Structures are given as C-alpha cells and as structure tokens.
Length: 508
Image (cartoon, rainbow, N blue to C red):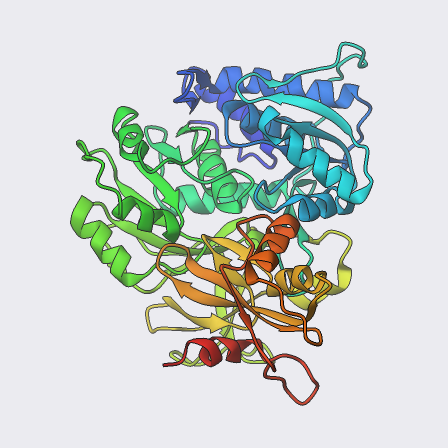
C-alpha cells in the first residue's frame, strides 16, 4: 500500500482496504465456499451501518450480537462499529443468567440473534425481565432487516476515541465487567499483532476461537483487517477437520489457546503438507512447556507464546518469530506497548524479582462501563494498567508469570470468577458455605472444583448440586467436582482462604 495516511478508526481501515486492495480476499467460509473481497466487505458493512442508523440508533448506543463465528456475524460486528455504535458480542457459553445480566448492564437497544442462539437469548431475557428489540442474524448473509423499518442513513465517521467494542470479562467481584475498547484501542491491538508477527497481505489465518472471545476478535479478525490479509472463518473449531482446513486453504498462521493444543496433540488425524504454515500462536492462558515441545517436535511448526488481556485488546507480550530466540515457559517481551514489573507502590522491581505485571500503551482500554471505581483501581493516573498477574522480568525483557493476585480461574482461555460459582452454589437452599477454586488440568489449563458446607444435617447428592450449577452457570463454568466439608479455612476477617483449598483437598 502506497498510501501513508494511517487509519484512525475502523471505518477508515475498512474504507482504505476496499480502496487499496478491493479485489483481495478478506474472509472465506469453509462451509459455504463463499469468498468476500475487501470491496464487497466494505459494501456490506456500510449497508449494515446505514440500516442500523435507520433504526434510529444514536452514536454510543450498544448493539448486542449473539452468534457463533461466520462471515455474517463478522460483518455484523464491523457494521455496528462502522456506524459509530458499540458492539457487544455475547459469550454463548456463559449461561442464561450471565447473558441476561450482560444484556441489562450494557443497556443494549437491540440484539441480533442467530437461529442457534434463540433459546439462550429468550432464557436470558426471561431471567432479567427484558424485552429487547430482537432481529435475526443469518450466519452467511448477515442481518435480516424488518421491512417496516425506517430509511437507511449514511454513516458519519466515528472518532478514534469512540467506543467500538464492549466485551464482558469476569473479575474477582463475580459479575462480568464491560471492557470499553475504542477504535484507537482496536486498531492498536490489530497493529501489534500484525507487526509483531510480520503478517503481510499474502498471509492467511484460520480463525479457531469464537469472535466473542478477545483472542478470536482482536487477534485473528483485527490482525487480518489491519494487515489487509485473509481470514478463513469456519463456524466452529473442530479438531477432526483442523488440519484439513489448514492444508486446503494453505493457512500461514492461527491463534489458539492451550486447551486446543492439547486436543490437537491427542488427535491422530493425518496431517498433510504444512510447509506454508509459518507459525502457530498461543495465548489466553499459560502454555504447558511439555505440550509446547511435543507440538513443535511432532508438526515442525513453531508456537509463538504470547500474553494478553481483554482490557488491552489481547496481546501485551510476544515471543519473536524464528530465527530469533524464543523462550519456552515465557509469553515473551513487550511489543508495541510498555511492560513493567512493579511493587505494591508500582515502583519498578529489579530484574528477576517478582511483582505485579503492569502494561501501558495505545491498546489499553478506556475503562469499565459504569464502573468508575473499578476503572480507577485498575488503571493508574499515569496510564499503567494493573494486570493482577504476578511475575518477573529477565535480563532480556522477557516476562515469566508466576501466579495471579486475582483469584480468577482460567479454563480453556476463558476467565471465570470463583465468586460466580460460589454464588450459584449458595443459591441452593441446602448450601451454607461455598468456595470454588482452580485445579491444574492438562486439557483446559485449569478446571473448576468447589468446597461446600451443608446447612444443618442436609444430605443431598452432589450430582444434584452439579445440575443446579449447570442450570445457573452453564456446563462450562460449573464445577467438575464438589467436595463436602465440615469447615473451610478462613483468615482473621472470616474470609475463606481460597488458595489453601487446593492443598487441603489434593495434597498427598
């Protein structure tokens, strides 16, 4: 591209790609065979934006999206942002109660729903007593417009600081928090990916993570948008067809979470010629060095381990590409932003000493929606975002994560607040106390278990409690094991010492 004007908004980026590389292919759907060029993408995105504004939606209004991955859902997201509105992709594995909370909290005026998600969204709205304007989203064609709606309106250009994405992430408070990412944040996230991994127009990515996950959206979708390269967008990740898609579409990279690497390694599907696959990328949770080595030995493809947060549009550190030296066990060094390991006063720690990992840069969120106090706790006055992770930096600037200040459980790359599980268990009439905790797991990185104390002499089957949790949280967030206890370890204030539970249950 010869144009030196750097886009300041996603609308400008979409327009520029259509102008400079209109015939190039942005998205491919393996299920339908459809290929969408950058010129066609702009046409469809601007049409969606115009129709949204025709609904009477004003800049800054939230538009919720409930859909699995597809060309249609990706264009829907981009259309919302192109119009200067706020896209709120809903976590489809969160369960009706959490989806309902998100819909109410984000103040969405309208929700676009794929057919597969209708029951979930109806249950979520019933949970909160909501009756949002609901419109159908076709996975391939995009939104299906009501014939009675108003005339489409031409979108005006949003500003770089206009919020484009609100993605909800779990925190230690239990309720998900709405992370507000501006156009500038999203573009920075995409640039740090594309520049950090040397992604060029000729590259092709396979999207194996849902785009309601920050990794799927900001790494794979934003990374290909900013670099004007291609993304192959299947409806869902399938380990049995994974290598076949990589080979068929000659993909040069993909971004996955450690859980997926475990499944890929445990699958015996034959693998074809991988000479076009430049690298694999791992993020969202620490990658086991054993899985890392086994994957590289078996497939002769380097894994680039990285670290990211929803609050930073994903990536904050990355290992370099070969032939530069990567360090297994480390998510790499800062790229694009600044990283500091600080003490309790956020003063930089000497090399090799453990402290909290902090990040500062153009990708750092604008804050948590309607939670100014949480925002102030997380982002310092001089712009450092507190990650809540403990770690140290070596002499080469590589970060090593040693633990978490926050008690988040990271299962399959998804952040889960233990308190969410506590509260679901405590809603059962026979449970007196409850505390969930993380357990190391080869497939998911961490799995969920919980300790409970029954009220009085209550004696019900643990399976009943598990089913209760599934009804409240969905299967993914529900504990795999529930341990019945007579007492829980507590500190002087009476707070359960959650970090002691693992040793209490699993110590040899």
